[in-house]
Image (cartoon, rainbow, N blue to C red; front, top):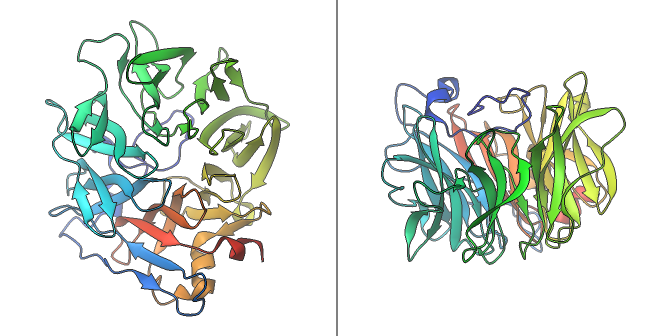
Length: 389
């Protein structure tokens, strides 16, 4: 289910590149019918839980949820046709899944990667084979390029956004070498941060604080090993501390004020461990059942609920969506929902990645495999107190 090849296999699953879309997780013969109803567990009226598959756009066969607004009401991501071509979508309970609209001219495919506080601003990538451009969407403007066609630097990905939508982070193509990490603020346009992106333009995870004054991500080190960083206007780009024996690291999500950052640490045996940085303290978050790989992708407002993925592979059908509460105990999200009363509703579903969580820790979205064997975006409502029982 991995959408693009990382030389280190560091990145969690994101299916959006047409030329590398795995047909094995799709039904090649026909368009599947997806469940679209929301299911509430009756057992806990004071804190109801729910699970919902979001389906796909008309004519498409699969989807992935890749972004969630801070208030938990809007999901963004990509819906895929039978050839694997992605189409950016915006979902709400009121409208269902709706295409964002026509991508920039010359770039027929698109993926939504991040959304602001209330889902009124969505950013992502538009692509045509190996060519990519960053876009910004609002209802008033539709999908627009973040930078002009011949601009230098030219934004080629947009995958992190502030609460108001006025600060965006991603990677920008420069004159030579790897793309550089940038911060966009509208009036000032794209300003690079003085460090190269490790992902050569395939940047799909960035952490941006609510005010946009803290950015976290993965940068390319001089020794060709990726490292997690935090950027602020005062300190610039600063490498985050690592766990013992680490050879690489990366950051993907930040809390509201930027003091809590989540991501991964990599070791010489190619294993990965989900990692949290709280100010300057670093802590490993473990993996499910001694899995070889785990990664933390996003955190709630105060860092009390964290979501991610764990498995012998990431970006595959065998991976499992995971969640941590304030006690930092890793849990299988599927099991959490089943124990909360949703056994019937989740029958036949596999949750492979939880990549977004609302500010209050109540709403989670991500990627699942539905009973027909196809990838499908999902949204779930949980009770955070159940995570620490």
